[in-house]
Amino acid sequence: MASITVNFTPNTIGTHIIRYRDQAVGGAYLGYNVTVPLNEVNIPRSETIYVSSLDIYCQSAVYECYILAECEGFADTSPTDGVPDAATQFTVDIDPIEDPCKLYQLTYTNTASTAQLNWDKLACAGRAGSKVADPIYDANIAGQQTQRICSTNADIQEFVLDNPDWQAVPLAATEKYGNGATTNCHCLCYDNVSIVNNTGAPLEVHYIKWDEGNADHLKIVSEIVSGGAQIIRDIVPNTVKGATTSNTDFNVIVNSDCGVIYPA
Image (cartoon, rainbow, N blue to C red):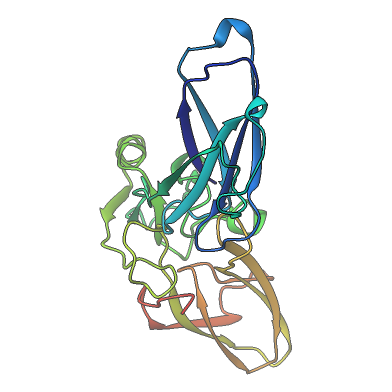
């Protein structure tokens, strides 16, 4: 969640009114009040206000703000613009920050054995390539020796030292937000895949896709694929899982490997 920081020095006791709004949206100002006691008059203070659900890795915004002591009154006559005449106006810029997560490809080299990735320790919260908090994706790595995951360099180095059967290679991922023009956005890449039901009966399949409505932008999707049918989807790589234990029920064909700008 994005925030703005308002620094000011009150010169009187009582309630101080801070109002703010997204410049691009306009409309009514939102409110934030600060009560200043006697012993804090003339002392600089800083107020952090959480302003919206902006994606701090991808989006920017300018907030129009004003501040005044309540005792100054709310007369608005010159001009009538929704801002009290006694208020001090200012703007605050919110700029995207660099996502500390980077995209890595992990390969399990000990094919004579199987192992589990400790996703919960390794992955960046909310931006974990092939992992979300769901038992379907905590499965054994058998049959799927290569995974992409978003993580920090420190966590990756620690993981490889503790798990010598794994190799990790950083990937240069195209950013995946809006039209793909922004940089330092989410550490996520997307494959366009064909999912083929190899059996003659309807079967359920699970995969992870982009979802604008979630804070981490990931969503588990389950759907029924008719016997012998094929569906084409944009998904987080390596997240197709059949509802059965068979590895041959579905055939996944990668049409575009980590190259989908999604959402468009």
